[in-house]
Image 1 (cartoon, rainbow, N blue to C red):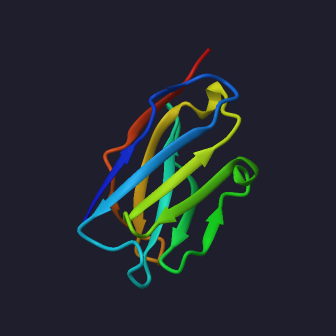
Image 2: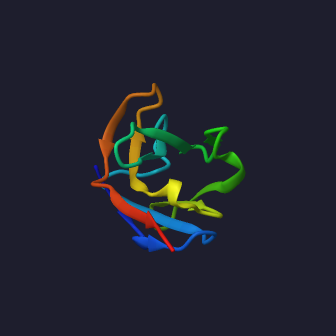
Amino acid sequence: VQLQESGPGLLKPSQTLSLTCTVSGGSITTDTYHWAWIRQPPGKGLEWMGAIAYSGRINYNPSLKSRTSISRDTSKNQITLQLSSVTPEDTAVYYCVRDTGSFYLDYWGQGTQVTVSS
């Protein structure tokens, strides 16, 4: 299984971040798997942002829920992340990750750097 993130690397404050995760070698609708977005700001730990399950059910980190939207395109086997009203505090490496359904993260994308700066 391979996961590849794509999207703009530089945004200005107040813009909306949009990232796409393209999954190959496995279907995003395969039973039990969840597909998560995780980010890591510089010098800080990992932060789970949310995930979409094989069923389409979505869960969000409560601290980000008001600004976050996760969706999927099953025809393209893609997961998307949108984060609105970004600030410099949203600067981070963003990862697309597969969760086996038991909070075990077995496959990671390479990550994509997103910088928010005026």
